[in-house]
Image 1: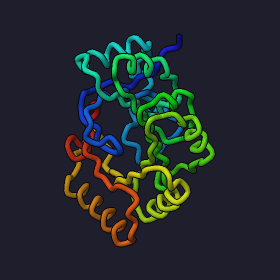
Image 2: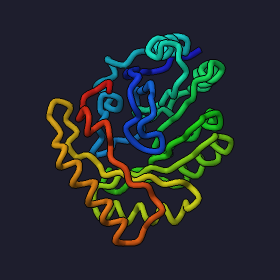
Image 3: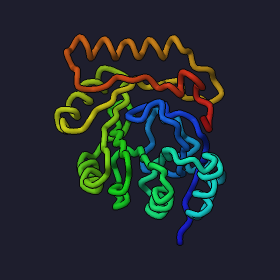
Length: 236
């Protein structure tokens, strides 16, 4: 069986954003990504310059670390990255769910995998124009098809500016059946530099006021709790 490329496994801590915000979670952050967003806050899991820090782990080794960190108490395991869809997590999901754990995955929606169908929560987070990526909606549609039997599928979009906001509105119209979560982007991504909580709050207020003034009540507008609590520190 091929090994999984793992950038870090950490927790339990709370999920800081999206549909499961506040939920106790162990995070499995994978190494490798098919995107290179201009504002990426996880370059240590994306840039191949960090490849030497990624561990090649078997499913049993990953599961053992999840079990150790959680103390054997079933909780949510979040597969993140990088882009976890590059790899095959079907065996890990089956192993954990057999012991009562729930599995969530966050991916940009560029690569579809059959194991999406086994997830408890799939968060599709298409990247808006500020990312510098030209997003392919055909790949997103393939992810939706792959996740038809997943228990929950939602869309989450990070907003940095007015162009992103208008792009998100168009995406929401296209996929009106998907629950939508919006959050203001964090431009301060350097791990060694502090994050100004007031700046984070101001950006959130801007997004709240914009959606309310437009009468756009469909999305849930949320902060990035982990940024408010820990800034850009790794492993929290």
